[in-house]
Length: 221
Image 1 (cartoon, rainbow, N blue to C red):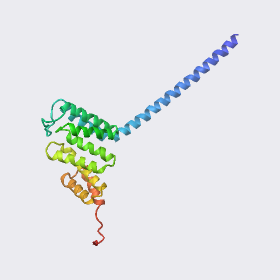
Image 2: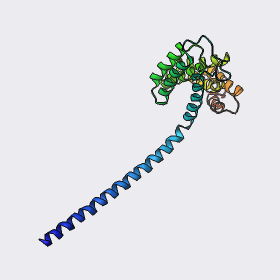
Image 3: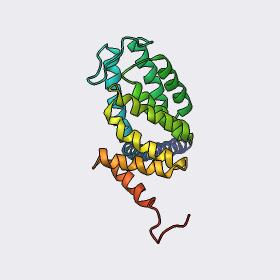
Image 4: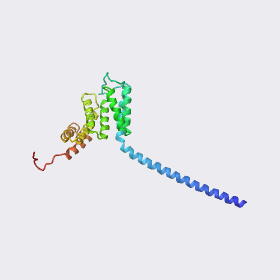
């Protein structure tokens, strides 16, 4: 009887050792997964750094509008259809859809904003991101019209000048996609003239270089 108990106790101890081993293996696997996830998060953070900067900038502008403060250089019109807080909330939701990749929902939100928010200080932002939604869906004619809305908003003094160069670059790209090479070259040259040294100017110069007409000799009509 005593021997049987000893054998049973030994078996239980062996099972406990095996269980401890399994727990240790599971713990190592979990730690490895966490380390891998951390690496991926670091890589993802690098890819979305520029987007995060845009989010912070827009959040500051939206918060200022919701609190009733108009950012310098963006005078709001008293005829705004929606109250500033409601307009800002509508814009915030549409922009959130952009960051989630829900471009069609974002498009609808920005279109609603532009229809209902009147002369909101975020109007040029909405035109730009509406253009991005159309551009992502390869609707280049619609995107072109939206990006030109940025220029109109900036031209009348109500827009954010920071959007001018990016909007112009997108306009040039849309014109290329719509097979308007002359217009595209003029747009790229405008970027070089008005925004020298910018990232947009660097990209515009590359497109100008790659789209130079052949210089092998005169062409016949």
